[in-house]
Image (cartoon, rainbow, N blue to C red):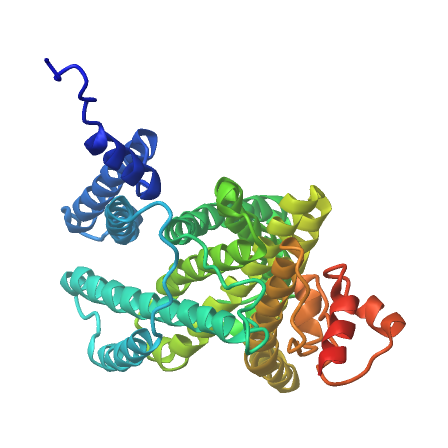
Length: 472
């Protein structure tokens, strides 16, 4: 009897392969469309780097403004091209779902201090004596300024991320928190930083256009102001002219913040698909603002003046954080707007960012004009600047962190843990467009009617507190 037909075919290997395939998910990978865009970014970065090198090292006599502008255009294109190449190559190697990993802030802090010391020595030693020294000294200035703002930007961002991690509530000790700290994906943060750099270039062009239009519109008034000041007079005499003072205050404290915050918000708009939660808008906005400030600060410090490096280096570090906070306000407002569908939430966040940015600029211009017009005005502006750096900026950072915690719990429809105790930072909460939500501490008996108005997040919160108290 032939039993070959009675033997069932062996299908065990196929079953084993099928089960393994269903149990082990396929790792995320970039789509063909994403790879094409990253390849295009590599090509654009390579072209920008090449054009920047040709413009900077090309033949020039520096006898005309065109030669100087070409050299500085090359100085701008070289780091932008190198940054695009680095980020595109790094993104291709990483997984699309790789989350942001919090590194330590000690290394960039030490690098910032070291570069600041080197830059201070270089500003004292390097002097342009001939036109032949112009190009190499400019290259050294760019390298030092880029290293300083890059290390300062990394230091500021990691300091901010550490604040976020330290402030996140741990919930009950015997159980994990209801809402875990889940960082945004890594690649949107990097590309948000690139959008901040491009936004700085766009804002610079728009501000130059505004200055040109203002000069054309008030040509006669400016001509009269210039004629009233003789060539032998000090520059402070020109700054005493009302038309100059009013124009500077309006341009620096109102127009410039409106233009810059709008240009930074373009990056958030382009990457709105990656803003799923308030923490995404907060961290991406911080990345855009810090990178925007890096361009601004790098151009300011590249002059290698002694005063620029002695005081300006640390002042520009505070400016990096300010730019980051302002755009993080817009980022949280954008996340709030995407969830609620109300455009006014975004516009309100933009207005608060412009207010903070404009106050900073007004104080800065007040210091510049203050010492030439009135010592009292100058001293008052210095005091306000120190308050902004030492009080308003840190409190706004903590208020922003606690805001996204509260809204993150609300988005997850979870009650805040009983250990939650946000500090009332006043102006910081107002700038974030939120308020601290207080919860009753464990171990105290609170009437339900007194608890309910304070805890709008989570419908079952009062009942959970009562049950916990009964079991104690």
